[in-house]
Amino acid sequence: MARRVINNDIRRLLLWRCRYFEVRRLYEQGQCPEPSVREYFYYIDHQGMLFLDDSRMKNFTSCFKDKKFLEFFFKRLRLNTTGRYMKEFPYLSVCGRERNFIRCDDYPIVFTHVIHDTASGQLEPRLSYGHAGDLLSVKFEPWKVFMSPETGRVYHPAPELAGGVGLVRSKLAIDFSKWFEFDDEHRSPTHLIWDDRQYKLERDWYYKALGKKP
Image (cartoon, rainbow, N blue to C red; front, top):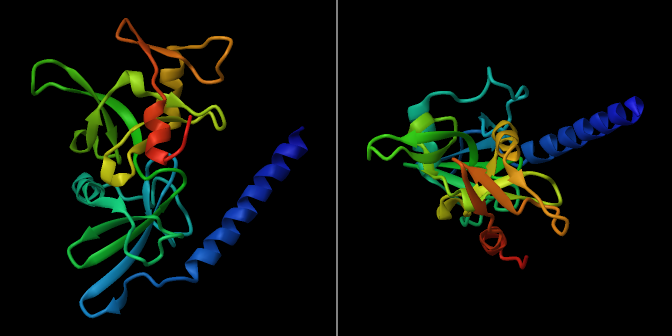
């Protein structure tokens, strides 16, 4: 069993390296396809951390951490409809004359924490994303937490311009899983207990965002 796990890890690493060099040949950071336009290329991992795509080491020391920059970058994140690199980099953040092409491990919006909006005095729960604290968040809708029966990953609605679906990072997903309720007919949870209230989980929003049927 240990040997099989090691072999699988090696296989994933080799596939990642092949994919890395295949994509890397497509561009040059800071290239100018037309006058006054520069193009840069980024990668977002399953923890929501942002990197330059050609960074050899992708870990906490090499990711972008400035919250103001992250807010600026993610608020401009859109689906890539430019006709350039749409397959390899399906997302885009336009900052002035810079086109920032983005690829990701799953989805570019990754929810990392539950925070509370105290401005209204109602302690409304929100989901923070992009590692920008309270600068980037969406309203938390507990009834729309969805766990994929195929992968076990957990999702929540994200801004429509970014595709409408966001990944819940594993640490937060584990917290949610403590309050999931299942039945004998479904591989995904059917209910979530949140703040002492039981919510029946909806799944249609997820498949609708992907243009699929449940």
